[in-house]
Image (cartoon, rainbow, N blue to C red; front, top):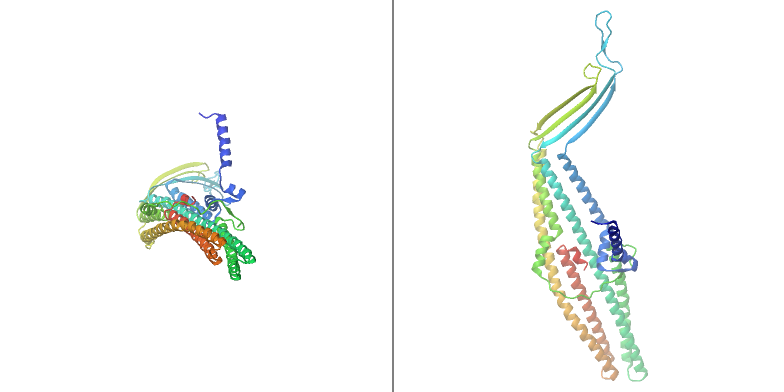
Length: 443
């Protein structure tokens, strides 16, 4: 049994743990955002998610309204009536007083109780349909959350790629400027030609706009990420993750199976189909007999011609069967059955779309993984070529043009590797979105 001291220590420990746990609040304080924090923040600040939560609550209240049909309906009525010119009667007997037929003051209090006993499934299936509709709405909300997580992840990776490309462009420019300075010194010493100097200057001038363009790309990528997160007006985001990752083996058959079983859109449609089926059965019940019990208890004054409070009560059972309503209920029943078929067709099409989406993601992962390995090895080779070219140029064994070509090739190899990393991680995000794994998207 917990003591008061144990409870207090437990609460303090929880507060201490929450204070140390990283989260969106911590990210806002230190300015560093991880991918998981960005996704979590977006889930709590996106207006579309808030709308869906309201819709879930709306459907739940509608379900409660249907369920109320199972419960007894109790009403209480009361009234007072004053009759100014109440009729009276006099007997033709001397000495007798006239007597009232109806009294001036009239009071009435009545309680009524109605209880549904049998509705041929109308209430039962209607309530079950609403319960499944609540589940379908919640799953639809999860599908929107999944789509939002994917959008934030794609924007986040876009910022990482833009930042790394900008860094590569800046370092390439710095290398070209250092080579230009080296060529200038050799020209001053008489060991280089003016052609080499001009070629180096052209290379530097060609790289300057690429750096500016890359900087603009970073700015736009941050704006897109801020908008996806719901941080419009706060685009100066600093990210803690990087594009670097480890290539892992993927079991394609497993993910294809998971997508068909776990994707929230498919689960929502399955629930909606069952809800539509139950709704059709409820509509059918409206064409069949229903039975209801009722009872009243009245306390009133006067009762007939007595100037006194009277009590009376009634109990009964009634049955109702609609013989003809202009085919209104029958048309509603047929419409519900048609809706089931519509959802079936939508479900089949959605399954095909999700299979294609998952398959594309798997193929993209495989292709990007190959590029990650080949471009990574190519970066190492390109860097070695730059080193050899620099040393050879210093020794006078190569020309400045060869050094410039080696540096350009190294930069292109580095950017190609960054793009491969980006494509690999982006494909994994799309794969996890395809199977409905929102948590894995942020990892």
